[in-house]
Image (cartoon, rainbow, N blue to C red; front, side):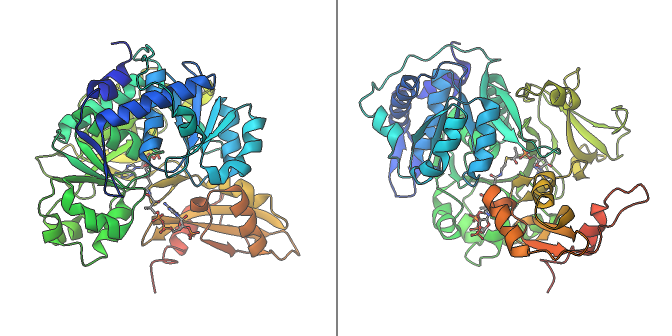
Length: 505
Ligand code: MCA
Ligand code: AMP
């Protein structure tokens, strides 16, 4: 195939009048209309001087046009680099510099804030607004509706997705065309998606979950998506009767369960509910079945690996587990020190290998070597076990990571910022249970001797540099941080002591 990703997911639908996207406004976009838009965008992007292999960074609101940017990159052989819409200019600056992106696409409302960081990084800047207008659509308006697909190899990069690191520096995970295609093919079959599926899509499209898992599956099958700008409870409840399937993070399901309109009748016709990106509490799984008669299908993945495991479609979907390794994925539970496989039932580090596993971190060979073994196994940093019936259970993390509403937050990045604030001697950031987001961020601060901390000023400094979802929801001053005999901060002590901060009374 000339360009495996484009041909497999997009090109096959050329000329198809079947619906691809059902939009919140009530209208639908056919595959053919979407591909014509894609071709015009591909011309406009290339006219900016981008050539195959260049990176295009996009911090844009979810829309059919935003999705067409992904498709246009695939068709023009450009590496797509989607960015969380919540990131600040400081954060974007790092991604542009590190990736060497040639073009930054942003919402018109952010143009003024991002112009300087784009210039600093040597990237051009174009706008694409949530309503589909902006400089890119303007430039694309008179372009041809066909574009000669750029040949690519299966091992060429399709996307660069940044994931934070334990050092506080984000790492660009290099995903190849075949990483994406192979995972979409396996999941489509495993979860029995067909062209009759209408997927309710309320996830963001700057992460693996909404962009690759959800969208690529639908593209592969020729089904359609009810494509909502974000998760809006009323809208989701109103539109569920038109859907056959839905994918979400646990927060979607707990919010639905909190609403009495979400009942058995509303979803009796549904084929499948899938959950991932964060642990689905066993109690949510049970409550969901009691309310709706459906068992949520939980699966487990990572930015670096796409999806690794899934509960079965036909067999028992077991609460508190993430199911079995997907076909083609080798999964082992390894001793954290030696990397040797542990006997069944023992807790160790989850390692995975397969066509889904990424190529490495962009420009970080040492980091890649630390996490991706020479034999192809990727060290996930998740702690788990395999039960006596082969189900994988995730029991914790060997990495200092908070997952809030499905977004990953690395404490180190926040601690580095807190430590810089006037009067702060040291800090520790931990995740504590939260009824809506699963976990949320709490910052503990110790003042320098004789200083009184200005917590409002510290919170303001955080909001200038860090995306809203990373802000500590509470800042707490302590006389000292709990430490073990080796002097290491005991975050587990803080987590345990403050576990009820948001969940009790
Ligand atoms: C929004 N806010 C958040 C979050 N989202 N704060 C913490 N954690 C979050 N996840 C901020 C808002 O800016 C707002 O700030 C306040 O919190 C409350 O906003 P709310 O309206 O309640 O939030 P929302 O807009 O409804 O968003 C919540 C959400 C959203 C629907 C759960 O975060 C979401 O769609 N999450 C999905 C993330 C996802 O797709 N993850 C996949 C990663 P203020 O108080 O100032 O107004 S891919 C992955 O993990 C792997 C590969 C995998 O396995 O899938
Ligand atoms: P990300 O770096 O955003 O790709 O997030 C990947 C991490 O999310 C994994 O390493 C896990 O810690 C977590 N994760 C994803 N799916 C699940 C799940 N079903 N249960 C528990 N944790 C999950």
